[in-house]
Image (cartoon, rainbow, N blue to C red; front, side, top):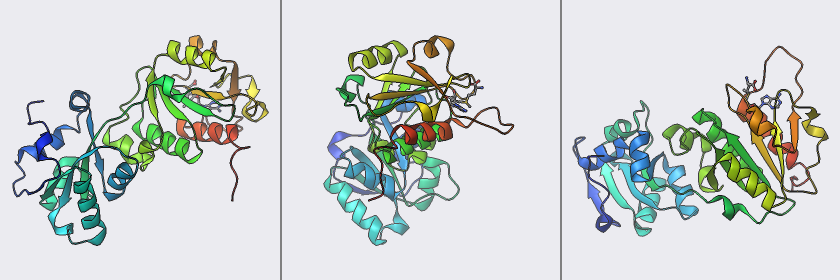
Length: 282
Ligand code: SAM
């Protein structure tokens, strides 16, 4: 990436930017491309809510771009001061700059640059019988991934494991779809081998989901052992080699003409069934 990197010694400062050609705006815009996110280990999050969620969860909000015309809004100015106190560089920019960075017609008042954070598989252990993990084999759709992370958070899942070549969890679309849950649930990248080894070490059952699954997902036991739910790819499903290593293969019954359920919907059904005995309305 040729644009200037975020300069550590500008942290906690407040600056006014007037030109859309400003290098900070260019550097932020570059983060819409995966290769730049990977190189920089930083990503963009749109909107005040995501910046607040990130700060609440102790993530490093490095730069906060705020549309100058929104600075007087109480929730925006409060966030801006909080971010600066937490060490963010605050850049007041023309309204157009936010649209320019995120390529959105109706941009939010705020966009932030946040340092990425992934967890190691081992940190999800040791697992208790009440723990559930969801593992996704080669998930391709950012909306699906974000929705699954959000559902995992809502149901108290221990972590989301991305197996194989998955869509980038730090893309604008995925981050947007998580609605802030990205900051609440550990996200892990792992090979299938590492996932199965982790399950063995932790005495966890791996329940694969498969259209040729032999058992109704509601008939399986989820109470006495920790569970890793393994979901297949949107197009090709769970490969035979992975399905063969699962302790159980679960089927969600269908009766209409649809070939299968959407991955995020199937994941939600599995997560809520696995955790049904733990979830209660207070
Ligand atoms: N054509 C793919 C196939 O043959 O598996 C369909 C994949 S489906 C869109 C994506 C994933 O959602 C599946 O791999 C599985 O994990 C899950 N899934 C969808 N419908 C399901 C069902 N009725 N029972 C169990 N899992 C299901």
